[in-house]
Amino acid sequence: MASSGSVGDTADRQQHRVRVAIVGAGFGGLGTAATLKRAGLNDFVLLERASEVGGTWEVNTYPGAQCDIPSILYSFSFAPNPEWSRLYPLQPEIKDYLRRCAEDFDLGGHLRMEHEVLEAAWDEDEQHWNVVTDKGTWQAQVLVGATGPFSEPSVPDLPGLENFQGKVFHTAQWDHEHDLTGERVAIIGTGASGVQIIPRVQPLAGELTVFQRTPTWIMPHPDRRMTRFERRVFQRFPAVQRFARECFDLVQEALVPGFVHRPGLLKGMEWLGRAHLRRQVRDRELRAKLTPNYSFGCKRPTFSNKYYPALAKPNVDVVTSGITEVRENGIVTADGTLHELDTIVMGTGFRMTDNPVFDRVRGKGGRSLNDVWQGDAQAHLGTTISGFPNFFFLLGPNSVVYTSQVVTIEAQVAYIMSCLRQIEQRRLASIDVKPEVQRSFADEVEHGLRNSVWNVGGCSSYYLNDAGRNFVFYPGFNRAFRSRTREAELADYHTIGVAEQRSATSSTSQRTS
Image 1 (tube, rainbow, N blue to C red):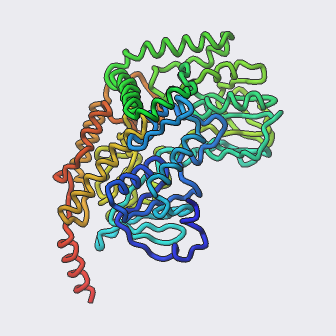
Image 2: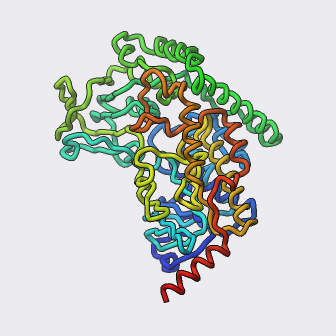
Image 3: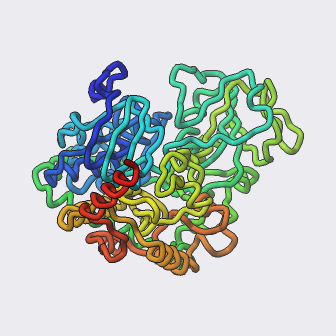
């Protein structure tokens, strides 16, 4: 795939024009591209800064990287994989699945690898997007942002970090050349990536120091290998796999009432998490450190059968005192202790509210997403943003339903396809969601989440922005979201027809001359 976007290709430095430009070649970008191909729409390009497809599953190669959604559900409904080796797939298998999707849907000719998007700006006069990459410029009527929420690593601003003499890297930039054997290793953060990494690093490290700000709800992991019989059945009878997918989807849906409407329904999950902790950690002092003091679901819970046993090993120290500074030889915590280290691993998540892409996308009047949002991201149905005509943002604000993100992506892609059809049928140059429609959706979300687990009891989570508003989740079932995104209502949009655009352009040209 990489050959289609070679750095030395002078043709790529020219200006190109396409109907649709897609930024990002992870699940969102590939899902959009495959759907366009299936609909017979071939006038598009897919721009990716990495050298291979996969998005977050191409970047996050840290030991133990694994999806926390069942493989049957964490895949495209139109591209089932009967050969999943595990119930919960590991990173290499997910990346391989996405690579095969790119091949199966013949996306190679549309892919431009190692094309970093530097800016995407709306031209109001010409009614198109100018997408500037480090290899050239693309003009597109429609722009699809498929960069994903986990594309930019977040590194905390720790005083003195630049003075540390050892090795420092983020989980999303794992240094596979660096040998941790026998080293004094620090892992900062105990979120999903930290939970997966720690059991892999613990047997290698001479000493492992885990810096925990907030304990995570850890549930027993139901992962297992898929049997040969199951794979054979899925292969011979695709309807069985579709039925299994629906069953897993319903299990995820069953959690929505507890998360969104009555958090008290999640008490059973809390009991299960506490029982899992008691069973695996006998030391009372360590168990106290690892016991969450917030409601289940407030922060992202995760699965593991190996995390707690790893933390209980004699070469591991769980530190809950805050970090005050980093010195040449280690980390100093608020209790005055110097923890001498050779390597620091940042398991500190991603830039959710200040992603650099928000500065690179500029709509009407040259205003960027950051300029418009001011730290409070909003979008109609999590997909279209007022002031950004013909722009569709996958996994945008309040689009995520509590299930596989691939389910959300497919619902949004269906919405995009509906918009494209109506733009074509009505001969429109652009559509721009009305600000009052976007505001109404934001108000609906805020009202719908007012009693959710994220909005009661003093919950503090990356799901909330600085204003305390949940900007991630949709307040309801994924079936409701899919129903609303099946067909776009163009009455919700300001529209400009092709004839109007031509007339305006002609008038501008005459005044200029």
